[in-house]
Length: 342
Image 1: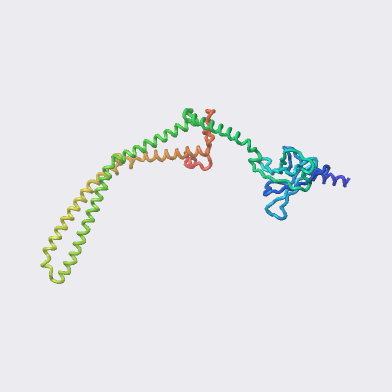
Image 2: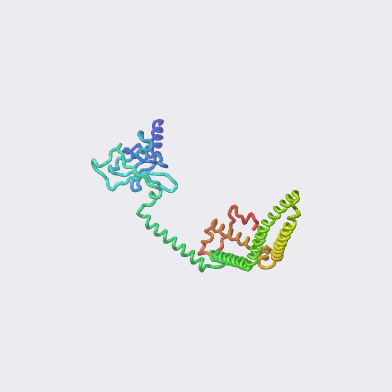
C-alpha cells in the first residue's frame, strides 16, 4: 500500500508539472535570448492543441546571455528539423507558452530526433494576440469608428441641445469668449481715448527734465563763479569783478524763473488729470476705480479654469450624445472649487 501511495504521489506530482509517466516523450532543446514569464510545465502546443510541456529552463553553459529551454513532447508527434518553436504570450494577464510551427509532418531523416535543437523565435504581446495580416482591417475599422465619433461630436457641438450636454458647454464657451472680446474692446477704447493725455504728460515730463539738465550747467557755472569770487575776495580783487558777477547772477536768476514757471505750468496741467483719475472720473478713472469690472474678469477667468479642468478630468461627461440625461456632478479630488466654497 505504501509503495502504491508513493507511486501515485510521484505520478500526480509529475502530472501537475505536465509530464505523464505512462507515456513516452522526446526531448528537444530551444535557444532564446529572453524567456520572461515562461515557467516550467508551460504548455507546448501545435495549432492550439497541447502536445507537450516545458520541462526545464537553464542558462547556456558557454554563453550567459542565452537561455536553453527543454521541451518534452509526445513521441507520436513527428517534428521536422526546420520547425520553429515560437515563444509567445498566452494572454494579457501574463504567462507564456511555446507554439510549434511547421507546414507538414516529416518522415525519415527529415524528422528531428530527441536531443536535437529547434529554431527559437520570440513574439511580442501584440504579435502573439493578433496576426500581422489582420492588423490593417482592424486599423481601418478603428479609423472609421474614430471618424464617426468625431463627426458625431462636431454635429453635437454645432447643432446639439443648448440646455444640456455638449450644446450647453459650447454655448457657455461662446458666451465667455464674447465677454472677453467685449472687455478687450473696452480696454482698447479707454487707452485710445486717453492716449493724447498720456502723450502730453510724458512730453511735459521730458521737457521738465530737459530744462533741469540745461539749468544744471548754469548752476555749475554759478558755483564756479562763487568759488572764484571767494578767491578774489581773499586777494582783494572783488571790487573790479563785482559788477560782472552781479550781471551773471541776474541772467541766471531769470533763467531759473523761466524754468520754474514752465515747471509750475506743467504741474498745473497734470494735477487735474491725476485728481480726475483718483476721483474715478472719465474712462481711465472708471477702469482704475470700478472694482466690479475687476471682479468680473477674475470670476470669468476662474470659471474658464474650472470648466477646462472638468473637461480634462471627466471627458466622458461631455460625450453623452444619445442621452439627454444629465449626469450628477462629481467633484474631483483636490478641486479648487470645493476649497473656495463655490
